[in-house]
Image (tube, rainbow, N blue to C red; front, side):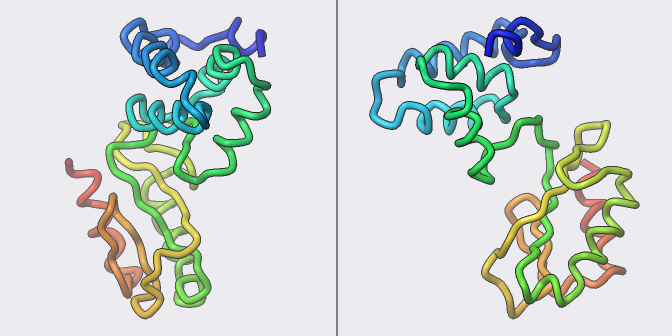
Length: 169
């Protein structure tokens, strides 16, 4: 745990005084709350936008819990991310109907067009690519979720339009 905190990158929220103050405030306000780890991590994800390894170590130390306990929560729940997300997220449903309906091919096309892989963000910070398990719109397969808006029956020729909406802003 100490090694992670000894080598904090300049772009990490802990290296930014304003963001570190937010982190400290969230920890101070919630350390005695039942389920403090989950409460704190949820608030950090919402306010900071991601939970880096140094942030995980910092929370673990502040709560006097093992780093593995904090990391276990962050890695288990898909809501949490360890890297900053782009201004827009494009999620590809990998549920059975969507998978069979062509999501893998759509995802490959998006990766080629954006020059990134799943879990990565474009250099300009515009788009993050993600996969999800099921969005509950199986009759609309394949489904691509742009930010919070689901697009159904997405064909390969429609995908560039969805991507352009994100990269034009």
